[in-house]
Structures are given as structure tokens and as C-alpha cells.
Image (cartoon, rainbow, N blue to C red; front, top):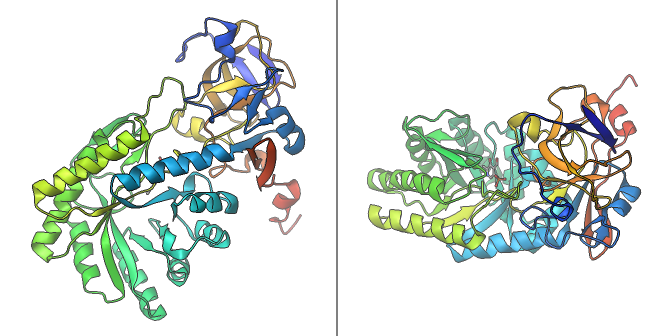
Amino acid sequence: MRAHPAGPLHADVVADHASVARPTSADELNRLSPAVWPTGAHRNADGALEIGGVDVRDAVSAFGSPLFLFDEDDLRTRARRYRTAYVDAGARLVYYAAKAFLSTTVARWVTEEGLGIDVASGGELAVALRAGVPGDRLLMHGNNKSMAEIEAAVEAGVGRIVIDSFEDIVRIADAAGRAGVVQPVLVRVTLGVGAHTRVFIATAHEDQKFGLSVASGAAEEAVRRIAKLPSLDLMGLHSHIGSQIFDAAGFQVAAARVVTVAQRIWDEQGIEIEELNLGGGMGIAYLESDDPLDVPDMALQIGDIVGKECAAAGIPMPALAFEPGRAIVDVSVDGGMSDNIRTALYDAEYSVTLASRASKAEPVLCRVVGKHCESGDIVVRDAWLPADISPGDLLAVAATGAYCRSMASNYNYLPRPAVVSARAGELAVVLRRETLDDLLQLDPGA
Ligand SMILES: Cc1ncc(COP(=O)(O)O)c(C=O)c1O
């Protein structure tokens, strides 16, 4: 059975099962869990959702729907919380993982809050530089960096380039040599530890495309080759085990394995691993039932684990670095698979609420689907929404700041939505809405 369309979305009533519990009262149905929604998000006297002091109905009137809406203060607070907690736990620098979402505005905010930025392409590098982020606060990733991307990074004086392959070593050494600089690098190691959505798996094999294998000896061979190249400065090792990590257990296994590698490099090659970057993946609450560890607790536990492993291995404690992405950005959206592919792609779960008003109607178990020509075009698989949702109502989906706009597509020729920020009752454009003209400009025959 199909319920009433709400804005550009459709809420299908699903009868079979619920992964989320049925609200027992209208108050519970309208409640905004602080675990999921930005700090300060509330319903105003009309029952409408307010974020950053802005009524979402006003945001949609001004910028259209679907819309990504950031709470600037919430984002800055998260950035500060991560920087402080991880620096206290021994981090030299905490990088914001720009792949979660990047624009010049967000690059400036996180830089002002003391974070570096991890960029994964020449495009992300260009945005960060355009925002005025100093090169030495940037770190560049990429499993297949082009020569042009490497040259741009070297020219910008990027603080770290993460080596992902033997080709990277040759290319980065060449670019740095030609530029007459010594480029600091990290070697990304694959450890056979993977984390994704609350489970982590530790195996002896490494079935993924990133990094140099520890098991095969490739990681240590990379260190050997880098040490011979005068235009490269090996700062240390990098490991990223995955996403939505809710406790320190995954990091514990990764840290134990990476410290073993550092010890072998010290024993066999006499090279000290001075910096250890443990990547991102710190989990956030998409659902009220998600329960990530407190930020300082997680930071302290990880710092403690690395300290103990190094003491046991008899090697000096390296400086740490981290790359949280989704834990920094958190916004709300309505739309379909072109602006939120995560549900279709890997069954991501979200919290959704009726944003334009509160309702006393009975909760109905719904599936929030988009407008695309795909049966997998699902935004929220299971959600309790009031039965009286009707055309023109607005739905808001929490925690869509990370990996939604950045993975957005123009499928079905839908222009990508605007991104706006709200602060103290004021709205500001972070990225303007794409227009059909923007898309037609790509077509020389149009
Ligand atoms: C190397 C690296 N660092 C950091 C991140 C950020 O992860 P998250 O947003 O889960 O914190 C990613 C995400 O894919 C990554 O690949």
C-alpha cells in the first residue's frame, strides 16, 4: 500500500517487519533523539523542526527541496571535540576526512577548529587549497593517484602523501625530485583487520584494494625502497580499518598488528616509525539505538592501546594521527538515491521525522523511497511516521552530512541539491543547487 507522497518522497507503508520499535505515543513519535539530530534541533511552537535556529520550512522555501541543511555550530563543536580528545590522547594532528563532504566553507570551518584535512583526489585538494588551507595541514590519499594529482600535491607542499602502491613511490619521488623538495610520506598498510557497521573482522589475508600488504611483505619492502630515495621522507605508517566502529576493539587488533610491523622495521632496517595514522571510522548514531563510545573515552583507549603495544615491543611510542569523517559532519535532508545512495548501496540505516509539523496521528510503519526509476531507491528502509502525512509535508533525515552530497549523482538528470548551513537563525549557502543548465553545459550537442 502506498501512503501519501510527501514532498519529493514517497512513504510506502510496510507491513511485514520492523527493525525499529513502534512509538507508544505521539510525543515519542515527534521526539527528536539528541543522539541522532544536531545539538539544539527542536520543534518550535508550530511543531516544525528547527535546526541552527532556522525553521526547516523557511529553509525549503528559500532553497527548495530536497535540501542538505548543516548546523554550523554543531559541526564546529564536533570538530573541536575530536581535535581536543585525540590530541589529548597523543595525536599530532587530527584530519577531517574530506570525502565525507567538502566545500570551501566546511574546509575553512574545520581548519579554524584546528583540524587538518585528508583529501582523496586532486579535486578535493583543489577545493581545500581554494579555501586557503595551508598545504602542511593537508594529507593526500588515493589508491591510484595520477601524476598530475601527485605533482599538484607536491607543489602545494602537502604535509603527508600516503603511499598506496609501489608505483606511488616512484612517482612521488620523481615529482618531489623535480620540484627540489623532500616529500614527507606515510606507507598505508593492510593488516587483515576490517570494520564495517558494528562488526570487525580480523583475518590473515587482506582482501581489499587499498594499501600495501603486511602478510606478503610488500609493506616492509615499500619502506626499504622509500629509505633509499632522497626526495622522500618516511614519516610512518597508515592504517584505516573501516567505518562505523563503535568501540576500541577493532583499533586494538589493528594497533597490535601495526606495532609488530613497526618493530620489525626497526629491528631489520633500523628505521623508526615516528608517526602512526590510524585513519577514521569512528561511529556515529544514525539510529537512536546506535551507541558510539564517548569521544574522549575512545581516544584515550586507542592511545593507551598503542602505548602498551609499543612498550611491549620495546619501540618508542609514535605520534598518532586520525581521520574522522562522518563523525564531524551531520545534516538533514529529504530526497532520493541521487542524493543519498548509502541505503541502496550498503543498507545504511537512518532516522527520519516529519519536519514541517508535529502530529498526533497513529504511527505507521513506512518505507521512505525516492523518485528514481529503481526499485532499490530507498532512503529509509523502516521508519515509524504519522499516518496523516500528506502532500507538501516535509520529511527530514538525520546524519546525512557525510557521504550523501559527496556521493550524489545526477541519475535521471536530477540536479544535485543545495547545501546550506544554519546558525543563530541565519541561513548561508555552502553549495548552491545545481541547475539543469549546469548539466546541459556538459553536453556539447545541447
Ligand atoms: C583512509 C580513510 N580515512 C578516513 C575515512 C573516514 O571514515 P569515516 O567517515 O567513517 O570516519 C575513510 C573513509 O572511507 C578512509 O578511507
